[in-house]
Length: 86
Image 1 (cartoon, helix red, strand yellow):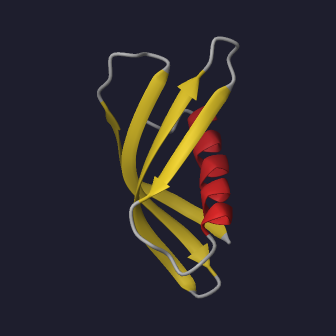
Image 2 (tube, rainbow, N blue to C red):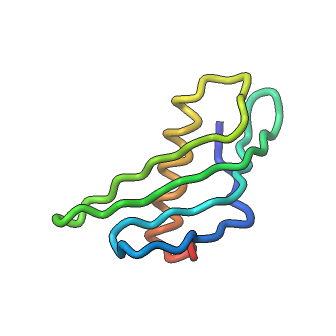
């Protein structure tokens, strides 16, 4: 399993600078083929600089959800560190 890309990602407006909320579409490569789903995710930074990423899938998937969420969290973390998120 591999996360191929995040599409149409946009940031929701918020008043708290250390909590960022996003919506978009994820494309994940599964053994049965590519899977596209709308997702919402948030990135929260604590006072010590550690980030916590939460991911929610909007559609059910015929595959274990925990590995998909873990792969999405790692991909989102990488995209955020590279400055590719809005």
